[in-house]
Length: 142
Image (tube, rainbow, N blue to C red):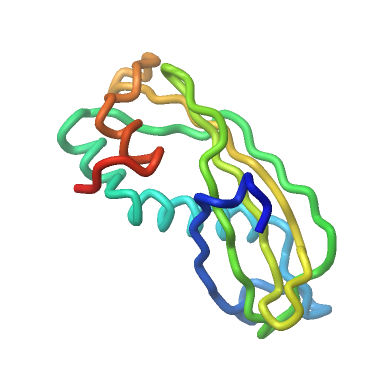
């Protein structure tokens, strides 16, 4: 495993029929949904709950940039693995990086990144609370 992926989290899912086009290939926008699945599981395994950030702190991680590089098609009923790891962490922003692999042969189907800014209920940028930064980096768990 690549050194960059050492602290990654993997979650598996299967490409559903509703996620494909007429040719049985996963519709391109679904990759961003799969990135969200990976990101949510990454945070969950690190003891970081979006709900806690929102309910207790009134803070939201908004996506300000998203990219995906498509390398090979994911097809109906393929079992895929979404690998997610923490990218860059700054005072008011952070990024997550992703790979989508076909479980059967390990082929990388896509890679991408999302960049997030932390905002309050009024939409003003705020600093990420230190406890959440520590958890995301693999420190203390809730």
